[in-house]
Length: 81
Ligand code: SF4
Image 1 (cartoon, rainbow, N blue to C red):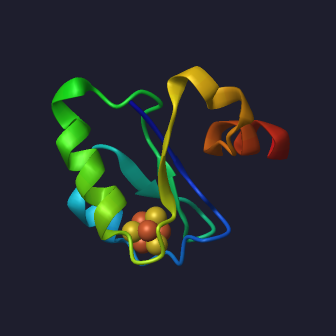
Image 2 (cartoon, rainbow, N blue to C red):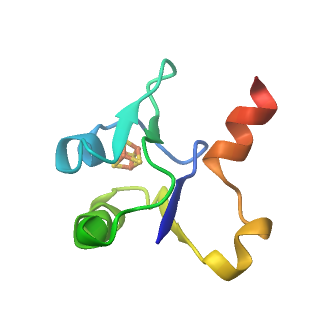
């Protein structure tokens, strides 16, 4: 599975990092970003937990078959670079 963090929605509460520091980190803007593009299978339950627990629903699962149309953290980072 793949996730993205909606940077406009993220309020930087840090809950996802506290829940799954293997998957998330805070960037210089105080927003959560993904550390891995593809969530390993053994971490999918943890990833789903972060989706459910984010207070502003900023963490979204990307449909692999349709990833080209989704807002994607990695794409946004590349644009900004
Ligand atoms: S839990 Fe949601 S709002 Fe909080 S830092 Fe993570 S993505 Fe942002």
